Amino acid sequence: QLVFQDPYSSLNPRKTVSHILSRPMELHGVGGGRMERRERVLDLLHRVGLSAEHIDRYPHEFSGGQRQRVAIARALSVGPELVIGDEPVSALDVSIQAQILNLFRDLQEEFGLTYLFIAHDLSVIRHISDRVAVMYVGKIVETGPAADLFADPLHPYTKALLAAVPEADPDRPPPKLTLKGEVTTPIDPPPGCRLCGRCPLETKICTELAPDLIPAGPGRQVACHNV
Image (cartoon, rainbow, N blue to C red; front, side, top):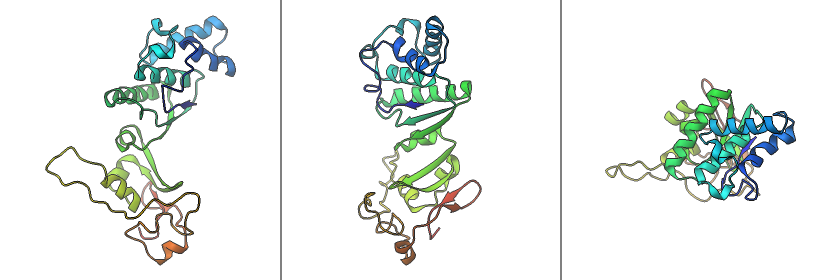
């Protein structure tokens, strides 16, 4: 099930919340008859922090955070084991982001869910993830437990990502760029490592052979010839 990126466009503006949440149940054959599905819709609304008075409203009557709660309820309506969130909070105000992320945590414990989050916001990834996979131009370059990866990044691209995160301290200098050049095009990548031309650790083998993702410690993997 997918929690869409943009809560403003992922909900049908011509359908009420009741229809938006009950339609997936109908299509997947869950929830029983019409009245049973309506009861399940009311229960889902309660679990995501909304109330019975919202059931017959249309998407334009909700705030961005409320719409995302409806989108989450829709994903849960058919009882999934895996929920994929593609930038699930990027369109929301920062304060609302925290509420939605905490809701994800609560629902994970309640329903025993597995999440796959796709995001560019490292603070979101750090808050919500147990394991992290870092990708560059369509290839995974490093994986590992979130705490270990953020505390001790191994791949040059991971290090550059974390170094670029600004800190709220006016006395600290701005982060230094550790990569040079432009991002490789995914349409015609180089024959070797896709970070070639930008990496400070680059050697001859990097231009000739793409590195495999190999073990680099307990629960960790990295794709780099020079790590």
